[in-house]
Length: 499
Ligand code: HEM
Image (tube, rainbow, N blue to C red; front, side, top):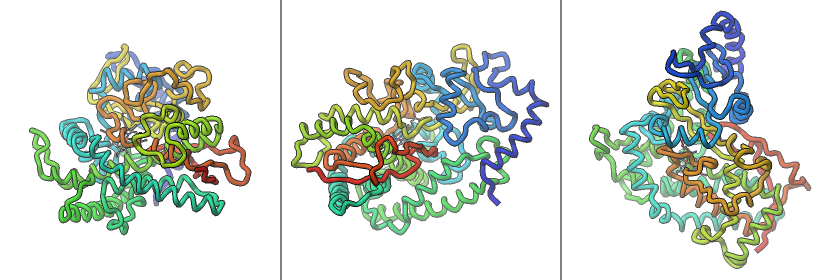
């Protein structure tokens, strides 16, 4: 029977209290480099579970509070895994720029190893010549400006249908679950670009498969924290991974077969042009497994991120009618009120740009980026960090730092970006929602287009209110921590067409 992580942790915590007394002295060595350097400050870990019991349901928030006590470079242990939590732009720059080559690998996580062979994709693949080659090929083929531009008409067509369906809901005075609707729109936009004619593959229900994948990857897995427990599969994740792997493999094989027969210019079709080609001089070949793993990583990267950002954006605008109105005024003056927003309007919409930055600051959908792992022992500022340490960059905490954002850091106030040259390209470490360095998100350009275009259209075409006379400050803003950080409760709203 699969046990919940909470039950297991409680049992382990009791055992550990016992061990703690016995092994007090050894546990006090937390992070010390056996004479190589100082220990990074951090809360004392328990044997076996380390600091897992301190994380709670919202680890980014728990670690934000702990970092206030221990500082922007804090040491914890996730089970037996030494982990550094980074919570300031200065520290982030040291890890993601100065020593990026040391910290640009990814940890090997059980679920990812089992499902699609974490080693052969892009996002969860360890640093090395394989990853470098995959990344280069993807940058030169599918993430180019011209490839993204070539899907502009698809985005326009899907968005027009979406607005029509909202218009119907508005005239029927319906309350719509906008979280679900945005999710479905983003899914269709992304899958059309990655897989092409998605209707053909509807039977596989990709959304369900990806949701199962992100669900499992987001679950706290004891086997990653305490590897000797992996063999027992106490949470049943190994068995679930196997089942999911079979389903995904069947779906992706069918898609590749179909693309081999009918040449297409979507991402899969573009990657297939590289099939069986050497990727580098180290003997790596772009084989079918690589294409399947890359496709899966891209779908995971594209599906939840933009949709979660958009539901947070609309939530904040509902809570701040002044900002909503100012954005509508900008759209009226640049776009007018006779047509839809076009992608080439986006660079002219300065206030929209500030609103989106403010959303990324307060609601980063990857609050720890994607966890990094160090490839060698290193000493930073006299602190010793052993090889294979996990690094979590807490950008959620950085977005709330009053030293950077002044005393109104908790407030949604897009005007803070007036006359600021902070951009989102990974150079300004105060605001790095897409990460930085070698692992910077390759879908950044696309993600920004999708978020800005849909948000602008929603605000331009409709006025929005909360149902049943709910006042904006009653809106529940709880978060749901997993692979991404969406709203805990779907956002339901009433649109009124305003064009
Ligand atoms: C609002 C939209 C998005 C946000 C906020 C976002 C954020 C991120 C972040 C924080 C990372 C980790 C960076 C690091 O470790 O330093 C990442 C990596 C990645 N993202 Fe995105 N992303 C978005 C959209 C997309 C889209 C649309 C795609 C694909 C079409 C995508 C594909 C990827 C991939 C493949 C990686 C892994 C890169 C690697 O490890 O080399 N992302 N993203």
